[in-house]
Length: 165
Image 1 (cartoon, helix red, strand yellow):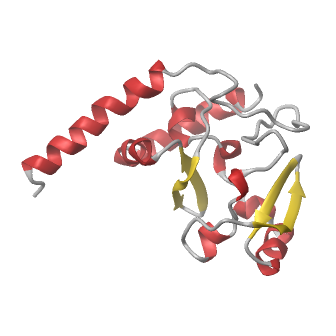
Image 2: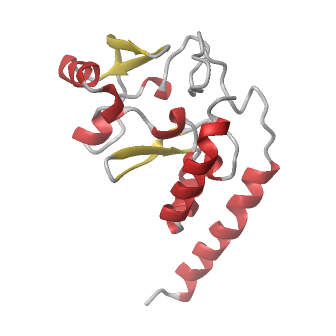
Image 3: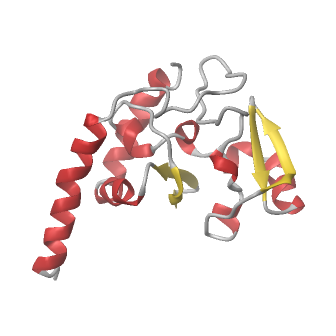
């Protein structure tokens, strides 16, 4: 049974997050520029082409935690540069990049479910059914998780068009 205090917090988050997402415009500050974008495959990259703000995509699966990568263990894939915490993680990625790539080009999963692209916080993440999902921040992630299956279904519908922009 959920306490009334916890229920109030959940309702508060549920009511505030959509308003915050809707109020934000799609400006260049929200969507970092991409170095050498691949047509039809939008990616959330910084100005140098770095993905995931330098976090290791493999570590989300192997360590189960966000782990900052190192430039010494870098690999490029499809116009993006990824950093890894170890040579082993880099090699795992090079062997099977599709297994470790974040969904929706590394944009906020809740944003994509609302047909928008937003930057992410690498600490707001979840691996679900073998796929890495990232969110703008932890409150947005909490809201996304309340109806995760529905939000994934919406994002999957919007991404083919949104990802081509």
